Length: 346
Image (cartoon, rainbow, N blue to C red):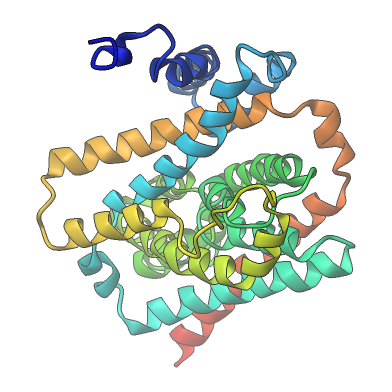
């Protein structure tokens, strides 16, 4: 009888869940505050969550809140990235045409290579260069978080990831203001203006804001181009995971018998949702709900990551990461503009 009711014993099975509640609740409050401020006053929701989280850094080492903060910074983060797949369909990608697709793919690949090569010149590790390049090339903070999940970890990993998230969000916000002015100055038609904005600005929200600032057609096209870049996240994460497989396994605690998988579970979720959405098996309401849930998970994860760092730690990162991300951003913008010029000429 005792054995059959053992699941009722105090602390049995529920204890790990209860340990997560204080830190998770704290991150949720920070995320809600960031969402409220962003809704009321505008501005990047993720950046607010990060800065608000940093203010509670002193709680990241508290025995009660630490487990929940760690859970949000890793488990909830991966779920949020996986759910991004609900926003993408194969028909959206096919509708772009081969010329647009090739420009976007080339921009992503060259930006990744730029990050890897320039990062080494600036004295950074290869994983740091790939992380910065991937964040600029694909979808800003979301890509940074996804790629960091499959890179080898060291004592500086979280700090550098946060530095990338902060910088790439700021640069994306600046681009949201400046790039529509560039498109108007160059008299780009809606399709080419959408290609420029969707193919260069880092975060989805900023792409939408910049595109619809010009007109409806530009906004629609920019959003589709951006979602195509987001869809490349799955391929990039698999490639990065395979390239750093040995280094990641070497960095894994030897006491852990199970090695990290080549393709993480959240990537399978991403691909499965893209397939379901492309096949038309996902109702529109479900698609929007999963998209909102994905955004909520990412805000929660960013809040937790903010709590794991401090302004002093961010300052210690120095000027090199900022310079690297700025050069990558300018590279991608110039590359796409040159490609648009060549496409228009021929």
